[in-house]
Every structure is written in structure tokens, then in C-alpha cells.
Amino acid sequence: MTGSGVSSGSGVSSGGRAGAVAGWCRRVGRYVSGSYTPVPSLVFAAAWAYGVTGLFAALDPLVTRWRPGAGTAVAAVTVFADLLLMRALDDVRDLGYDRRFNPGRPLASGAVRVRDLGVLYAVGSLAVLALNAVRPWQVAVLGVQLGYGVIVVAAHCRSGRPSGDRLLVNLLVSLPAPVLLHAYLYAGYLHEAGHRAGRPGLVAVTVAVLAAGHAELAKNLTRTPRPGERTYAAALGLRGTAALALAAPALSAALLAARSEAPPAWTPAAVLPLAVPAVAGYRFLRGRTRWPPAAPALHLLLAFAGYAALGLAR
Image (tube, rainbow, N blue to C red; front, side, top):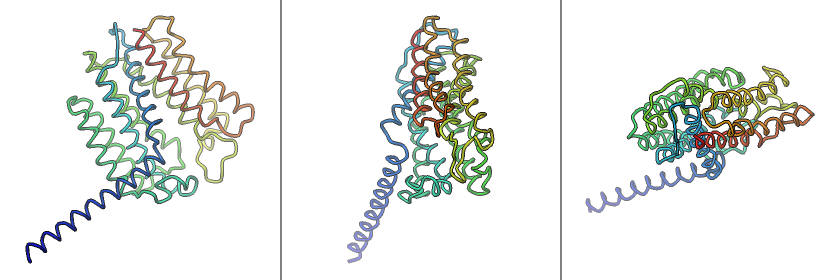
């Protein structure tokens, strides 16, 4: 009798845990499908990892030949997972805003809970660190980045600072996260190439950050924001924001073209992606209400492709 009771209780407990895990998996699955669609997100992450690694090779005067290897594939998977974790943190931080302006998002709609995303972040962080365990420098950089993200969001949730409406301050506070992700890719590149860190790596990170800055400035640019809608135009003005959104990729491409070690015939790979923000900017300045929504991501994808092409041309 006693043995039977213990067995039954154990079975209920195990069944309860299994049910809780299954429920969490379903909720996280709904979150991923609604906030981080896997196929396009994986394509973007792979383009980022291969492109920026190629960028390091394109600007490295010591390189005579670069080809992506197994380490680059691991980096692509890591970037995919890391961007998902950063998205989860952003959604937690912006929950109040999304409930007003983006109520269909999984967290804002209640399809997933903040606690679920906390577990996702913890499990995902351990997974990406384990994936890179054979390379201590990359693990260290990832650990700093993942920890920094938690600190920023925890400080915001506790004190409300910086306010989500202060976009320029938030941009500066959030900037270390992508910079550290590029530093992770640089550490992997140096490991594969057998080189030491140097100025070309800093130039490459600057090129990539400027290119991404265009997407950040342009993605919410509108002439007629809804009351309370966040847009950089509130601080910089409409034309000022548009000018910066166009200047950032232009500076990025100019710096890349000037410092690239690839043969001169490959220079168009550095500048052709500028066609996308140029056309989008022309349409917006001619009276379009919002910046074309697909243009910032398309520009980044083309820029990453250009970086990879320049690296392969070495």
C-alpha cells in the first residue's frame, strides 16, 4: 500500500513536470513564430555571421585567402540564437509600449509570459555558451554581452530608466550589445586566421555598426506618428533623422571602400547596397508617409553579401 502510494505520487509529479515543460514549449513556440520567424531569421543570422566574418578578412592586410569554415557555421547558429535572446529582452522592456501600439505581439497579447521568456533566456544563454565552449575568448565575449543585456533590462524594469521614449539614450545604452556580438565574430575570425587583434578589426566593427545604424534610424521613420509612437524624429526632426539615416550607410560604404584590401574591381560590392536606402530616401523625401518598411533589412542583407564577396575576393 505504502509503496503503491509513493509510486502514484511520483507519477503525478513527473506528469506535472512534463506537462509544465510541454506548456512552456508551446508558449515559446508561439512566441518564436510570432516575434522571430525562424526561416527568415536564420537567413539573416547566417548573412550576418558570414558577412561580417568576411568583412574582417576584407580589411585585414595579413590575409591572402579567406574561406568560411566550420567555425563560421557555429557562429551563424550562435548569432541566430543570440538575436532571439536579444529580441526576448527587448520585448520584455517594451511590454507596456507594445500593449498600446503592437497588441498582436505574443508577449503583449498574453500568448507567452515574461517568466517564459526568462527561462528561454537562461536556457538559451547556457546553450550558446556551451556551443562555443572550445573557444574561451568567444565564450567570454558572449558572456559579457548576455550579462549586459540582463543588467540593462533589469534596471529598466526596476526603475523605468532610461525611459523608452528617450530613443537616443536607449540607442547609446543598447549599442554595446551589437558591438559585443561583432567582437564575438572577430574573436572567432582571429582564432581561425591565427592573427592578433588590430586596428582593421576596429574599422570593420565601425563599418558594420554604421550600416546597422541606418536600419535603427529608418525603421520607424514617419511623417504622421500616432500619439505616443516612438520615432527618432521627435528628437532629431524629420529631415534630421532622414539625413542621418542616409549618412550612416554612406559613411559605412565609404570607409569600407577606402580600407578594403580586396582587388579594386570588387569595390562595387561595397557601394551597391547603397541603392536601397537611396531609393527609399528619395521616395520618403518626395512625400511618402513612412519609410519603406522592407528597405532597412534589405540594405543590411545586401551589405552582408557585399562583405562576404569582398572577403572571398582576397
